[in-house]
Length: 243
Image (cartoon, rainbow, N blue to C red; front, side, top):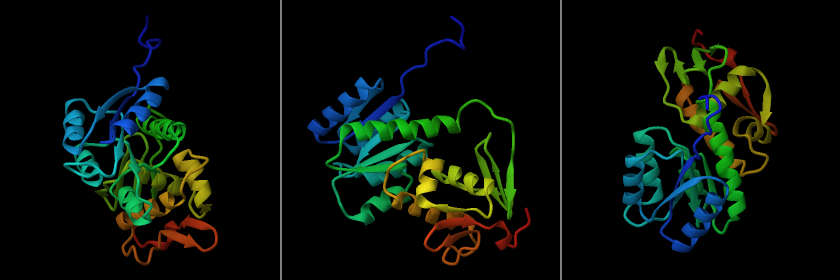
């Protein structure tokens, strides 16, 4: 069998939850959907398993013994890029936003539908694989002192490399591809995240994080402007930096 026709290995999912019932249900649904699943019951165990063999995606509970999910997510991100979906029983919006701000790609609030979680996993993996998939014709996007190379997944601002998460990179590339265009949050969720449903605060948080990395004054953004009643617009002519 040629390498081109060789079957691909199933994506490895690490489920981190100290509730055995939740872990069993989530793991069962993911396995039936064709994923290879491992389980860790606490934060230190999750970091140990991820260190031994890096997963393709982590389903991570927020409330964990040993280390909470936020700290586990931070340490996973320090070790390298890996998609993370956070599970939380908390209804507090600030907790959910904190998870997104430290780099989680999505979150699901308990109680949740296991089928919905599987759809979220598949969506995040599709975006992750698209980011590291086969080479495409090289087109480097440049505007307002920003440079984005979709092939190497490298972004710079005035010559200095930006540390962007998967979603932040995709969001910036999308803005640079369509300067001057107003986008609703629903459009950004479909076009950048690939989701037809989800909490729109996900978009808001990622725009805020991206502004913090590319704006001279994130409190008064000039590049990613808010279009009141609509959404956001990228205005490269509003920055003094040369491309």
